[in-house]
Image (cartoon, rainbow, N blue to C red; front, side):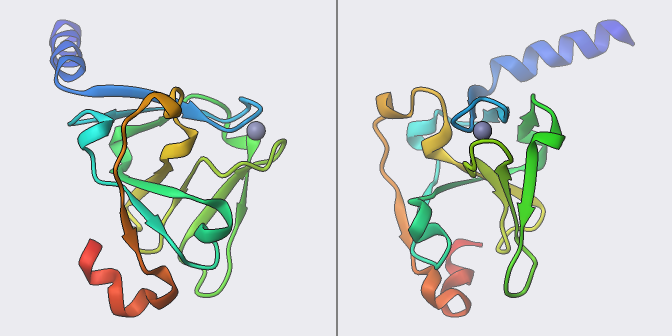
Length: 141
Ligand SMILES: [Zn+2]
């Protein structure tokens, strides 16, 4: 059984691309595993009332692709309007490095700008008109 788990974790690591990231003060840290390199993953800049102020770039991933490696207690949660999205931010430095989006309640959205080595990536991202959320959301689901 242990040997089986060991083998499957090796296969898992070989078939994924691992990135680390977090907030500014490092109290919030996470590791993500992507099927494709970050440069060929889908990501979106949104212009809604929240994302526009933060210059947030979304990378939406399944919850099992995300591992928080710091203490959950370092995070605080902010909600507004329909209170479906759960906006987490670092209690110490205030940076929102990931959250649970309203559009994909079973996923995490990671802020690509909060990945380590962000400036070294050659990224292209789509835009999402979050000011008109209801009219546009089906395009990205
Ligand atoms: Zn912080």
